[in-house]
Image (cartoon, rainbow, N blue to C red; front, side):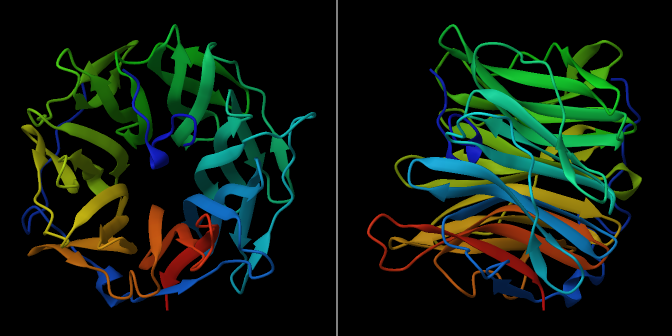
Length: 378
């Protein structure tokens, strides 16, 4: 997120039943193997300047959220797939200046119960709800400080929502957690981290991920689950001498859980990382060499399988990266990166359908003007 959210990163200086791996091995695949991704610009009236940050889908409908940039101003933006075409939706915003405002995450419980979260003016949390007819503002408490940005949302119902993000206070970055829903929200003390970036529900409890800055100055990955009124950190390995940033987490059918991100292998570029949760904690799962610098930033999993997305770059050009978990390991999803230069920021699964969004860069533009990019099964 912008001031600190991690899709353009700036880093500041349980009791739950353990899960078995899929019977076929670490990876399990489904009908997702039949999907070939096709790129489009979403709503075609004015994709230039629109940055799509997140997507969720249910019942054959999809919502893509982000911001629309005009000069120094970014306004919150939502478009939805009505089953036939993408359409822009009217968003209720707070009064006064807009500044740099955007949505960074979206959760669809049903076609008439959708939540979007982000940041207003780069300093205040922004939460809105779709009831099937209109989007409306939802008041949430401010954790204080500056650069309050919500980047993740999940829950069991609209009355049991968990929102995560980050804020700056006393010159340091701190994780943010809000819990509530249609009856109101409250601030929850977060784990000891610099940034929380995503959340998923595991056995009815929130599983959050992000990173902390260690005494040696490097970022180490953190995954924690809520145990009663406290957080319990789960075992996950760090890489000595490298930053490891986790930016996506997902829990699917039967409790299968995945987390993705990247290692900052300076000066050679970024290396994507992925982890799967098993009886002994989180295990690193190798990601094939993408032939240059690459990042995974989001992951989605359900009973059809698992898909992770991000971007890869080589020779000054970037292309979308989408990988599907299969028995043989991560394998490319056909069609991803077919229309570069582009990057992907979020992915959602709706049965055997894959929805993923991000941005392209207008070729030849002086300052690399962004343009909305959507991939879906063709």
